[in-house]
Length: 444
Ligand SMILES: O=CC(=O)O
Image (tube, rainbow, N blue to C red; front, side, top):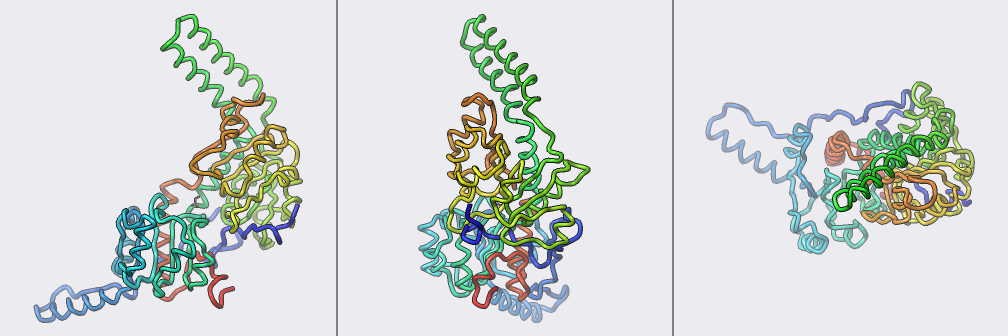
């Protein structure tokens, strides 16, 4: 299979310069503490009416000079102290929900309704994306004054960060804030593939649901037949799942992508006191010897090399810039027969029909997918396999609703990190988590 030199697999979520690259991988989110705002306004407590008027005039003048920040989406909810500093340093302008629909948003930009704003700020993942993709058409309407776009979310496939960079706009994601939640979820999914959790759960619940729905409408004899079938499904799963289940310990975990998320998954699953898996990875950028040593990770310079040794492959790399999958029929064919597959990255990275074929053929033994190619739709063949309705191996697939990063702690971090990125750039410091510096003029 082609190597990532011509495979469009980008580097994993970059570790910002402020993040320690060695030492214990189980580190807290390294968001640096705020420096006091140079632009916050302080008024003396006691003043004559004349000096008060002068101070008010000076404050008004200072306020009018504050950089404008276009805040798209819901208000800040979790970090009132940082927001107090943010909103005293900047004039925060919030378009309404109606103004955020693509047509209205573009019209407002053409009319320069929000003035010469300096930053775009999207603190919440569930809102602020109403205008759709930030492509050349939309980015071309931004005023020249915009210097930074700081957003919630680890992924940024909805924004053309190259086009933004070429306009001189630094895009900052919030992947650091989501890494722990995503890694925790990946652990659950890896365990699911080794222990066949969908099968265990379906056998305990689905027949019961079927029997209770039939008991409301059917004769007593029929409901007794359904209840007996539910008991048989339970007993069969109890007896048969054992022979198909394994402890992860000693098996090879193959991570495609070894950024913050990949490294946290390795720390959680590779530690001898927890799951004791053997860690292997492939990334376009090899990590330092100290990171590899701290995590006991073996680098594979080719994707096929990794796929050929892994007992469970976890996809944890950003979407390809061109939207093409990297887990194709060819890649699935390069995996060890019966190996497991987990996707907590982006659905567009996987050819789902090829995955369904590989599951049907037993080339892939079990899978767990949190993300899907056509969200919010889920591939019907994979749903059938998740429910155990197709094939003779029940519940081989675990499917979830893009939940991996979704915790309150992640959202606290999304807000905080986005505000800190805007504060840093507009106050003349380095962005905390930029992802597109290579596209800025003079960028590397
Ligand atoms: O998928 C979730 C994210 O990009 O944060």
